[in-house]
Image 1 (cartoon, rainbow, N blue to C red):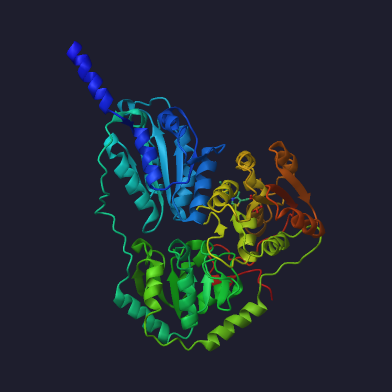
Image 2: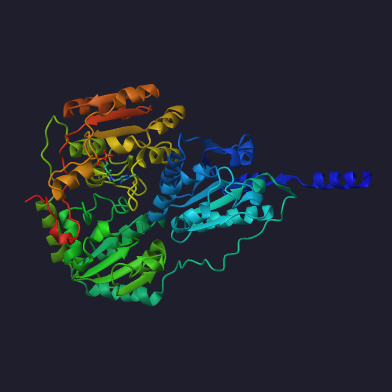
Length: 572
Ligand SMILES: Cc1ncc(C[n+]2csc(CCOP(=O)(O)OP(=O)(O)O)c2C)c(N)n1
């Protein structure tokens, strides 16, 4: 008996680290600056270690807020956003954020607590099959089964999330794995033979593209978010200036090419500008760099780029030819592809007539709206926010009309200043994503442009803004309605406004006050001018409740089923 006790003691002395220790150690090795996490039973062993850990921990007031904040952080910092949620309801609360990050290729490493391995599958308290639930909406997910694997698995998770086409990775952590003790394991290298993204494109494809550019008369580059992920903005500019190729942007790509550049011809897609959509409709060579030809961009595929040879540069081979037949596929990193393209000896295209045509379209068919002092016009508010921030703010939006006005009227000069939920279109994204964006760049002026309805899907995160004193400028475009839904009902459902009007909104100023944040109700352009001057440059959060015109619509617009050339609401 005595001998056995002594043996147990020796063993106990050797067991020096827990699974949770290994997790936090691995996060430090990855140089994680911030964790967006919410505690609960299954992650208590991890939270007990977080108590002594010097990585900043942000407590959102809802797990969905936490994961959207991590997305905002990832988009601006270029690093993986880190999230922790407990098992069961904590884990299911982050599902929307995972789907959002998957759609918009945002790198996240998400840890969920899980019930102990011995009771998995028994419907134990707060058990949810989060691997089953999230398999289609994660780049990769796994459950830790052996404590000694933790350092390698976490290293692999960060590698997978941030390389190739970025995306969310989820690691499910059973409670006994987090609290179990072992001797510190030997550091293992990652080994992922099945995951080898192609970085350098095939040289022959680069040649083929160069030749196609030389012989094109009406080339256009469609620049997507891949430009931002691969940090290729400078090289894109160099290539465009060398070859004199006009550029249009996708919604998520905004800022990848400077909006004030003479070869920039605007945002394309459902609410894009006339010139960008006509450029895609009339071009003879379309070079897609890092965009995925989604339906909001292409409109009816039967009418999309009908006269063009299509080239597509993408790090994800699955995207090439998925929606649009592609004659020149180029698989690889956008920056590497552009660095190869600028070195090619290729004669620039003879396209001066094409550029003149685009310039005249741009002059004759700009975005337009009828301004008035009151009711305040949301387009004018966006222009004022642009002016007040010199076009250098970080703009984060929610989803709806305000999002489209932000994309149309805020002219991004620089990359990585734009955070929006593009693919999933997630209401409730904006406010928490602004928190993450501000944490990624403390010195930036962060403007959160939100609708009055989307704001109410995550108002609780005002508490984080106050607590951390983040000087976010919250601009609510308050049209007392689900504006984008109302617009569709007006145009496509004979003005039958089924549940899209909310005349009895609460006082957002009083709500802000309850959280200790100063708020203003703004009803005219004059008022907006005075208040913006007062608040935009101070170091405090503020809520601006812009009472904007209720019936304003976003134009131009491409109706579902129509081609890009069939825009309505274009200035004549
Ligand atoms: C979670 C979620 N639910 C529903 C929708 C559908 N939807 C898209 S835009 C919109 C209206 C948004 O209204 P608001 O936030 O006030 O913005 P506005 O369009 O008025 O600018 C709705 C309901 C969505 N995108 N996301």
